[in-house]
Length: 436
Image 1 (spheres, one colour):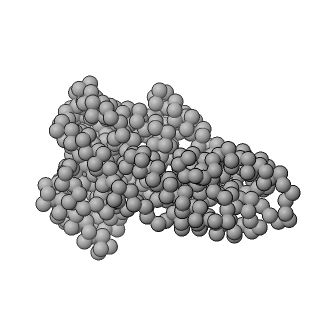
Image 2 (spheres, rainbow, N blue to C red):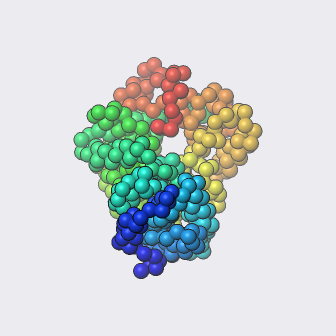
Image 3 (cartoon, rainbow, N blue to C red):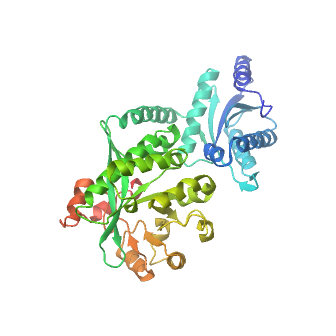
């Protein structure tokens, strides 16, 4: 009713009839399954009426961009294009035409929004012999495109099917992991920029799967976001970090504990009450808790999150903007809810001593932040040269593998007690940094 496009029932009927017809020599059918990237975030930010406007706009662009192939809307932000073809290159051209049609910005509530789509492609008769299996395979391929970063297409293969099965198994295991006590927290220390003392720590979740061992956060955090499990997991992280942060005050009075908040958590209407209850339950002083949100979320959802962030500030909780420098925000955008800390993204820190443009950007960011009385943390510091550059620019705190990898609680406690430093070895620094 919303778009005027035929629905899932029409698609199944149309495809089944097409497959039952005598096939022309060399003619195949390609099912292109589309799903808009991050549609839920747009819905949550602008409201469902704006989301409906976007769906209508996408339907028009699809219908106009692939006039020679029927377009169906399966529901929500899922669409299907059915393209007859003789050569694989023709399917690629169709997929690229769709991506090009959707690349034009959409105006929602006076703001210019860029929409991307992930496309999964399955081919009849090669990939499946019935409509249901063909659609499922295209759906699996679509998730493969999303896992590659979105905004692209992927063809179905047996490897795609195996990946989809693994993803389903991981999702089922994730549902049980919290109750089974399989999560634990590691902590990456934050060191003073000049004196090298540990002033704070960032809590980082780890999942110790009973069969696979430690699963990198890059594998399960996006899945937890998609399924909504991140809300209960995030609340567990906050409670555990406060309990352990309070305990560590015995060895390091005034030690700051930083905890990441996900966009899904900030969607919760009772988030402030939940955080307040956790502080009371654990005895963690509000002033020693710092909640981190990414710069991208901060600038795109400031209106929506403003009430919660303001109440956190009123409670005495510190606020930090993570990955700063990657979201194209300005200091002027922060005036309504001024954070306490900016964490400069490691993409600006890497090779800082050799990249003059990055050095100029980082120095300017630090100078401007200090003029607004904000603390600055340099993330992902791995070399002495990067450290010395940040010290020269007056960076307040340093976090990264140069000083220490993320540590389990017992190792951090030993470090705070004055045990031999757990700073990274060369082998440690060769580990993939993305898992932190």
